Length: 327
Image (tube, rainbow, N blue to C red; front, top):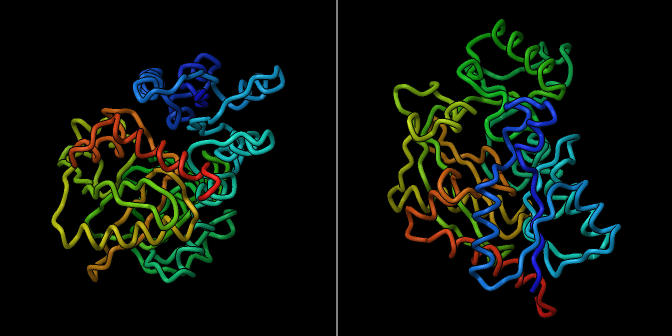
C-alpha cells in the first residue's frame, strides 16, 4: 500500500521569512523522518508530499496514493487545518486523522466549547472577544484566562494570560487582538491540576492511550502550559502518569469529548480540574504533535509501555478500519 505523507515543514517557512512563533505548530524534519521510517517498518511504501500547495501540484500532475498520513497544520485562516483533508476529499483519497469539519470546528475554541457545553461535558464559562469594544462586556468573575481563539502549541499564552482584574484583561485582550489578528477566548481560570489524555481510534472504538499530568517546575512560567514551557519542556516541565481514580475521571471527559466532536484515529484532549475537584474539558488537539521524543502523545505512550511504532500502528489501524467496506 502506497502512503503519502502531508506536512508543513518548519524550515521551509523559516526560509520564507516567517518567524519562530508563526511556525511554532509546524514540524521539524526529524518528525517527518520518524513517521516515514516507522510507516516503512510497518510494511507500507511511503511518499513525502509536503504541504497543501505541494499536494495540489502533485494531484494536478496525476499522482495518487492509497492513503495519506496527514499532519498539515496550514498557514492561513480558521480552516487552515482542514485545507489538506478538503483537497483529498475532492479527489476521493482517504487520509489519516480528522475530516475538514472537525478540524475547522476544533481550531475555533469558542465553537468547540459551545458543543462541549451543550453535550453536558464540564468546561469553564467563557466569552469570545471579537473587538476591543467587546472587552467591557466580559461578565465573568476573576481570575480569568485569555488566549487566542484559534492557535495551538501554546501560542499567545504566557504568565500574563492569567487575568487578575479589568485593567489587565483590557491590556491582554488588546495585545492578543493586535498580535494574532483573531478573536480572544476569555474563560474562567481553573486552579486545579492539569492533565492531557492521549486517544487512538474513532467513535465507539476510541480508547485512551494514557493520562499524563503536566507539572510545571519552579523555573517554568507560572500557572500556564505556555509556548515557552512546551518548547523547553525538558527543563521546565515534569510529565507523570497518575492514579487510577483520576485516570478514569479524565478518560471519561476526554473520550466523551472526542466522540461528540467526531475526532478520528488519534490525538489528545486537555483536562484541568476546577476548585470543586471536577475535571473540565479545556481543548482538543485532533492533529497532535507526533515527534517520538518531544511530543505529548508519544511521551505518554512511551510512559505507558507503548512504543512509537505501536502508537503509529494503532493510528493506522484506526484509519484502515474506517476504509473497510464493513465499517
